[in-house]
Length: 471
Image 1 (tube, rainbow, N blue to C red):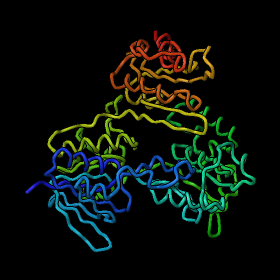
Image 2 (image 1 turned 30 degrees about the vertical axis):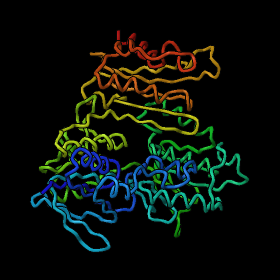
Image 3 (image 1 turned 30 degrees about the horizontal axis):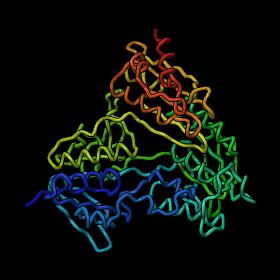
């Protein structure tokens, strides 16, 4: 009898693990339970589907259920919600329209993902209040945009500031939350002619990206006619049956729709009910090989903790690459080749209309001090290409290091779209994983040619300036 590997959750971590385990050990029986109809899809593409740049949900699917079943020989059971785990008997119980099934396992992966959080305010249950945490959420939002525009075909218009290219605005609408989903959905809605009101509880958008990047993004959104409310916590959503008004600290704004983009939380109920330990972040605790407190039960993706590359401490970083990488590692481990999947640095990127930004590592000084560092930060502006080359742009780099050791702790970069903020962040990521000092980063041999760069890349310029400050 071959061993059985059971996976709970059919998206990035789950299907990466299932595919890798089956590929490495073809005799392994692999069973995947997914409560929805969609598997292996790019949730990060949903804002662009709502915007209209992507025309069908199917384009976001990497591998179809049929391909997993027929080509990869994986027993994929969609429409099956796992409702219980018994680590002692090594079984999971799942429910579907056809009834209840109990499946035994030799190894089990929890890849239950994360759920969109809702702010603790009244009115989130009104009609016209949306979140964006699943394919079905994206479908509902796309249908809302199409109805509002009275456009059944919903072809993407030429992009520009809100309402500039349409005869009439189709808003107003509210976006609550200035993080990844909030910013991306602000662009998606504004590009379709909605008058967008963006509410952020804190004083900065994208707070994890640092002050310079946050200010650049906020200023650009205002240039696109987005109404940005900073330090404006939403207190209630009001309306008789559907949302009609957003009530914030000093504002009352009438809207026709509200999108909640206030973050995500790990889905841990199954693990908790089974007695599996959670970590300090509130996500499922694991060892370096993603094994939980229960023998042969693993956790990966947006439901699980990871180890931070800078601090060495548990971190919760619900991002796509982490899920894919750690899922693949679990698959290799279950198939007989123990693999850790590596630490995370919180590396992320975002596009906001004509601006791109990236961040990695630790930028917040309070967080750095709690980790035992004495942080120093410098922010510089540098040319993206040789000054004599046409269409030269500017890249703003914020670089943080430890005063005592000079170790690079983190960075944030922002530029106009296409001027290279995102791809330049990769050099800093390498420095973080090496534990490099600023003077080491200053001497990285980065590529140069006038169409792509200056002789001194903006990252090198930032390292030079910060190195001088440390000296």
